[in-house]
Amino acid sequence: MSIWSRIADAIAALSSGQSLADVFDQLRSPPEHTIAFTIAVIGLGAKMAKADGLVTRDEVTAFREVFHINEDDEKGAARLFNLARTDVAGFEEYAKRIKVMYRDREGPLIELIEGLFHIAVADGEYHPNEDKFLVRVAQIFEINKQDFSKLRARFVPDAERDPYEVLGLSADATLQEAKSAWRAMVRASHPDQMIARGVPQEAIKLAEKRLIAINKAWEQISGDAV
Image: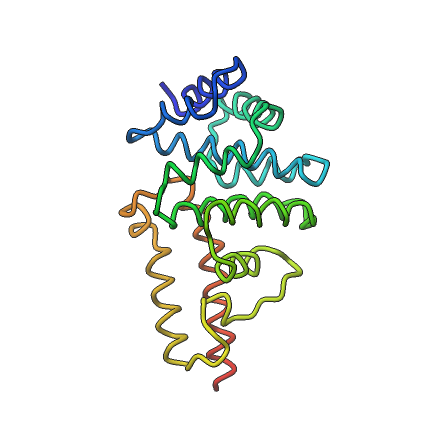
């Protein structure tokens, strides 16, 4: 059974009245975590896309960039996106169930927020309601404000991009501290490292954007030091 067939079954269960808790309980054992992660992005992404009042083609395209969809599965994926957008479960319930699923593993939760940011800015605008949505999801995920600001700086076009903030450093960090942080973040974003941590294949694609921001921050800091 393909991943989309499994997701379709889960979304159909939600649509038929089965509780969100029961659906996620059925997706606990590996390798089903990948499917649960995908459902999370569909559910939260669709609801966030709706937060600004309009779901655009760019946002749907952004979803496809995060999740590789075979041509034969495109209609099914679009159907799932629409179902998730209109199902009765609120986004906070999705977020709470995901937090329980990953418990204290912060990495996958941050990677999920990255996927949501990617979809949010796809139409060229970061709407205030999208920001409120993501702030609330980050609170439920227990992601601290500094880490959230760092993610916002990477993705939002008009956000102030403090290179030290991007690398998770204070403004008085030394050049050596910045270099060490940059190297550690580059290593952590390497596909092999992410696979070893059990990160879903779909989320690994987001590392490309992360690396661009990380490298740009280091270039700015090291350039200023010359």
